[in-house]
Length: 120
Image 1 (cartoon, rainbow, N blue to C red):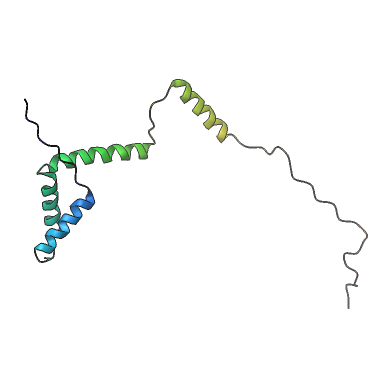
Image 2 (tube, one colour):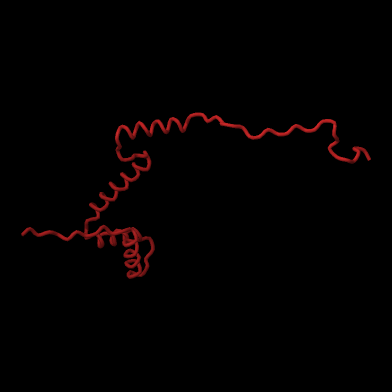
């Protein structure tokens, strides 16, 4: 029967931060050694497989950025692509109003606008 090694879960950012903070406190809160504690916490939580975890995370982040940056969507059928292109074209076409609002009534001529004389 082949022997398998247990798969360790990938530590999250919060897990690493918490352990790094504990290590920092246990060693008397020294200044300017934050990277050292971070890397040690990462190594302890990942079982020494930080390079593989880094590669896996970088690959996942790059793929996610590409999808967002280039608006990549899953491949669809050719008919769906044609329909989407037609909708896009029609939505960008110039719009003309179908009807205008009610026209204003013309002012009555010859009738004074107020009952008092203009000069006092």
